[in-house]
Image (cartoon, rainbow over all chains, first blue to last red; front, side):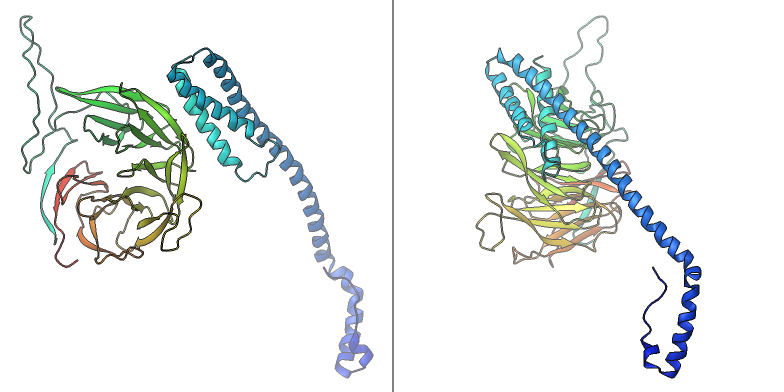
Length: 147
Length: 336
């Protein structure tokens, strides 16, 4: 962004050619505001737009984050609901076949309880979520034959 | 070409023989007993279709796999199911249908113990199933490690170690750790879809083939290895020790590593079959494979699969989009 005015060291030295150029430059300063108007407005407009865009971006990001986070919470909550129900149902059955299912069930509940719901920056978030989904699917199939 | 001798060709899927049950008796007489179709056909160039299992799947059957004992055949289909067929005196009977995958099942493989089965699907997951003495199948793990369509699964020749190949450009390995199946290694290097994987006879090396037109050879380094390759904890590391590039002009759909001779065969989208041999003396850290045989027009369309006969050295089977199954007799050339 250009602004009118500046230093003219050539003038103070009084050199011929430079002096003439300096003289021409000082009169050109007068027209700077008009000549550089378009570029200046363009620049100001860009800065305003950038600031506004950033603000809107943050708002949208927060909205997306809470929506997405809620989806994950809801999904995992659903798995926990099923798991706890199955745990009650299996409580009565103590035979060998069902002891295997109980083990898998305990593992799933353990994974769900251990999941860091407060930390969206947890580096293994996707990985752990996929493990929970896989365990739930495996259990769902196994429980189909019991329930 | 050199190293090749003759070719036995049989059209199996365009409508060969069909196994027929007893014909209806006349005048209410019980039908005559069915003559068993076994013992197997005599050795020779002709192959006869013994059975057509048509009642199991609603869509494309993508892969079939024999159990180690030879009694069961597993078929993986685009209808999202895997059927288990049991060999009976008069044909095959579907004993179970494994459901659970969300969409197309791409591959199925039996573990060498015969107790485990693996399937993989476009739904990005690999499933491990356990079968007990009563022929009851149970899913013991759903592995969601891949980020894209999983194309192929194969078991280690003598350990319960599973490998999978995916559209996400990686090969993953899985084993059981404290009653749970986990992904213990990810092999990165290919620049496009990995279509197939094969272990060598010892299980210390793995070959992978890809849409990037290369075959890569990977070697297992156990913790504390003398070559000084770093390992994390007790898990071995797999490193790429050879990259066969410049031999194939299209996607390589399958790779098969002969456990008898060590020869490596590839099935390519350029209709050709190639066989590679390792140059000896073998330098384990930097093995070199050279092209020992190349049949440019093995089929008239993409070659989809190649398989070495596990008992007869040099006998190779291939199949193609052109609807044909071909049998090849390969002999390692003198200069190799």
